[in-house]
Length: 226
Image (cartoon, rainbow, N blue to C red):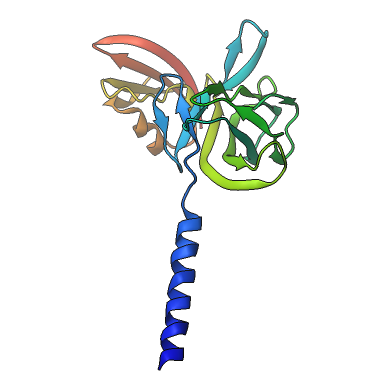
């Protein structure tokens, strides 16, 4: 009986230990540009648009990393490309730039001071006119000093970078609950009136004109080809 009890306690200890090891390390955390914590498992979306400073289309991944502890700590990140319709990804974290980023990339190890917040400095640079959504996962890793040894795994987020066709459906979708759309077919007939943008999903194949309206005023007109 004692042997069975010992085996049971050993098994229970292993389950508890495995559960504890599965928990996300809190040394580092993601933050948005406004200083809000981005929880582990979050999905963040960023739009690609013309960057006047660089003179090219790019989606800035506006995420930051914070050392939450009272001591200096070492960090690296694993960046995995889930899908990328065109172009390339650039990551300049924690202190070296990688361009282009390979499909499964682990950045160098760098030190962050106590309480320090550092820009992830990452951009997706699509090819002009090659519309679509690029998806990446980014996981922080607490490192054992300035080495390649992982001490613990930190939070992981999914990043969607959207390069929307301005003449397509993505160009008229909006998160503004006060905005509605009117849609007209090629003959000028009204096929959708005063509906949310999600109503575009019910349209059949064809050419349409979509009018976005907010507070009784037209704010955008787009051509849609389905």
